Image 1: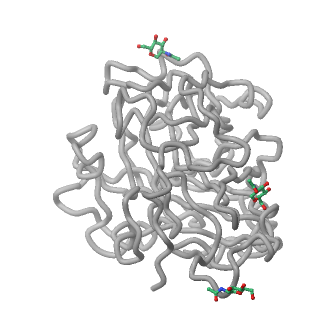
Image 2: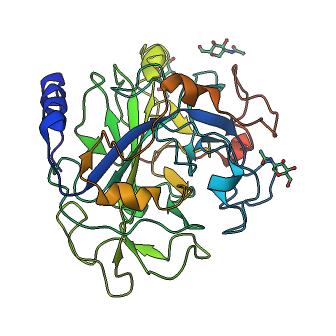
Amino acid sequence: MMLPNTASGLATLVAVLAIANPAHALLRFGCAQLVVQRLDPLVNPGEIPSAHLHQIIGGNSFNETMTPVEHDLPSLSTCTTCQFSEDFSNYWTAVLFFRARNGTYKRVPQVPNLGFEGTRGGMTVYYMQDALFDYGQASKVTAFKPGFRMLVGDASFRSRQQTQKFRQLTYTCLQERSTRSPETLGFPTKPCPAGIMANIRFPTCWDGVNLDSPTHQAHVSYPAEGTFESGGACPDTHPVRIPQLMYETVWDTSGFNDPELWPPANSSEGQPFVWSMGDRTGYATHGDYMFGWKGDALQRAMDDPCYVNCPTLKTQTIEEQNKCSVPDIVQEDIDGWLTELPGIANSKMTMPMHE
Ligand SMILES: *[C@@H]1O[C@H](CO)[C@@H](O)[C@H](O)[C@H]1NC(C)=O
Ligand SMILES: *[C@@H]1O[C@H](CO)[C@@H](O)[C@H](O)[C@H]1NC(C)=O
Ligand SMILES: *[C@@H]1O[C@H](CO)[C@@H](O)[C@H](O)[C@H]1NC(C)=O
């Protein structure tokens, strides 16, 4: 995948965005934080609290139970943290913590992605028809249907071999905020001056029938051969080409880069960052999605020739995005120096694997 890895690369990108005349759409937009709490209506519906801490973005109908179809995200939501104001979907990932030498944990702050300065936490969301920097965006995709949801990644994975099952769950060690390569499958092993960007790309083929599946994964698939980026065809079992959904979350690790704060070089502990499910390898990264665009807004947008700036979609300001939130119904301490990660006993913590 071609990604600009310098500030000048990004300047070129921005210039090209202004003149691109694609056949179909690429959406790239910011969504502020809706809430950070231990809820997971996809994997642990109805459980208060759920297994581990998540950051959730999107529509404010988010709740501990969201029964498919019946819980209609666009009609139950009154606001969204996303820039495109017809998008009441919910998107969530794990939350990053720093583990100090004394064994206590501190939540890593976030920093807005390039172009979304002023956004309170959150993520950058993409819906693509072709590879990110394919300005033509010539392929057609079928938008998700009401009630559609999916999960990518596995919170129990702790090895590189396991995570390779999911082709594109990666990290970028930001030398500067515009750094876009290389991407690694595990956590960066050296301090990253401008933070760590977690990249989550979902499968791009759907069985065309099921809105969900018991694993929340079996109803979607990667291309049969090659990749989405290489234009690989969908398998017969999952023939419907859906947009590539991608999340980028930038964790501002810069306050934790002093070597005195990292595990001693002669210890076996490696790097100090840990996901909220107790994973110190980075291989357990995962993303959840519940589709919730209003009416046919997403399909209309995908059929419309636009690249990042899509005039057919209604937008709201970052100030309005930041105002939308939901109450924290779990009400547990997630800030300050914690002796344990919320919901994760220290005895369940896994040591980093060296492979
Ligand atoms: C969440 O669900 C509970 C119980 O069904 C309900 O009382 C509450 O109003 C819901 N919250 C939101 C934000 O929809
Ligand atoms: C543990 O280490 C952190 C980071 O060095 C420090 O801020 C915190 O006060 C320490 N906590 C205790 C109980 O010593
Ligand atoms: C690592 O180095 C420190 C400081 O030199 C020393 O106190 C400690 O015992 C060493 N630990 C190991 C596991 O070698």
